[in-house]
Length: 270
Image (tube, rainbow, N blue to C red; front, top):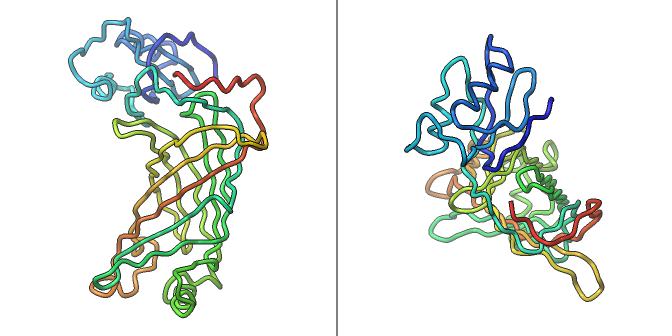
């Protein structure tokens, strides 16, 4: 992609165009009050320019973006992010979740109670980028490591009635994007479970970055998501016996594997 000057503002998304040229696309973008970050053969990434007078002031940033005239077509719109989203102590680099201090748990309704469980074997890697929106996460967990505190029930969960671990031994989650909403950070990604891949967003809380007494850089993240097990082909006894909705909770304490060159760990300010 060719680079264009990035004006002060907020990342709001990308659009594609049909028969129009990149130059005309750029002109329409800037003429509507947006600052262009990158120009490619078929797409642009844009930042809202607070110093420009948009043609459709008085409506939300997302709505303004949607009003760009054809043939400009939005391929995705990223929620408005304040120009300053502080993350104290933010460190750019690659991280590995430490099993002894992390947990991947789940819960669902069972009759009139709540069934809780966890997975004891998993691997989670996190890459924090200079711009948090470019960060990523990848998680793989061993379904056979399910632990609900009842061995007979765990064996049943491993059986063809539920996880079918002989055919589908693992679960994977791979992020596709990071965004910030009024409620905080959200990681979008694909969850692959029981041979079915579906988009599942994670609501994420960045609990902090720090250095322990041994001099090891650590970061802690909490994340939650909700899925319907029936959408992954695990719908047996859905209804009165057991709920369809499953809440997933992650508590990850990660150690820094590699710090990005030149990172000062001063905290992200947008």
